[in-house]
Image (cartoon, rainbow, N blue to C red; front, side, top):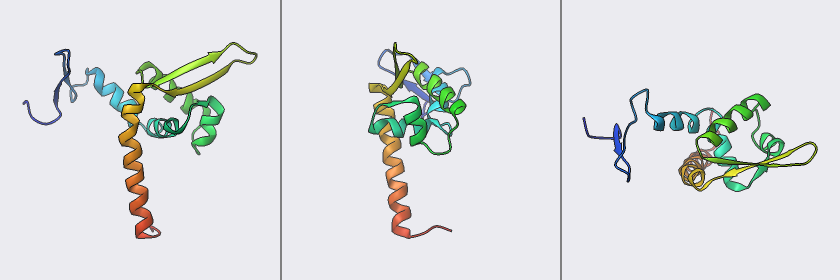
Length: 124
């Protein structure tokens, strides 16, 4: 089947079968759309943050889940990580160009949802 999003060809001619369990693009999508991945990308669109600043900006996330989420997003090339050689080390995170591209529609989606909810009034 060659229709829909099941098969995507990138500029290099490499094909990604996104519904196949071995597809590397599927792992990135899973990380981006994870419970906390979305919030990390949306939060980092506004500013670069140190670890604890980022944790404080996303209410409800534990340090463990933030660390796991950041590790995955850094590995995927969506987030950069900079360690300053101080005692204790200061670690800053921000979005790569790829992360900005992926985060933009997530921010738009969040904006549309909150706009719709605010225009409907309180939701039960």
